[in-house]
Amino acid sequence: MSDHPALMHTVVDALECRPLAEFYRELLGLRYRPGDEPPTDGSPDDADWLVLLDDAGRRVLAVQDVPSIKRPDWPEHSVPAQLHLDFAVPDVAALERHRRRAEELGATLLLDRTYDAEEPLYVLADPTGHPFCLLVSALG
Image (cartoon, rainbow, N blue to C red):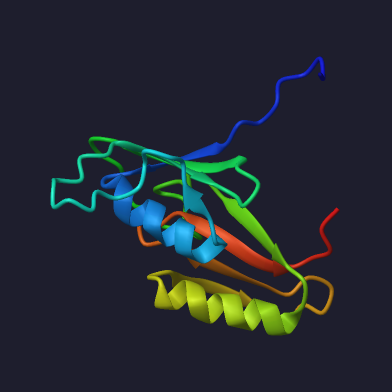
């Protein structure tokens, strides 16, 4: 065991956590922590905290309800980004595929920097406005 704290997960604020959790679940191929799945019996979905896991069962993201939040206006800074996530993909073909998928899930393109041969990337906003990057990068 390390003598340092370990990152448990990153938490993203939202006015409604289920729609944002669904966006990231679909985009990243994650699954809900047991007990966090949407109700299937017709009961109201009153979740205010949802945890998303990877295939190995590790926590990746959590989404929590907050009573108010201002939509970030990146690249302006009158309303700060508050959070910025970077997601690596292996090549330009994957970058294009994941950009289209993110937009189909409700993301909005903020910046196209695919002309940069050293690090092509897109900056997108999730459905609540949090910016995130999809970029070509070798992991590790």
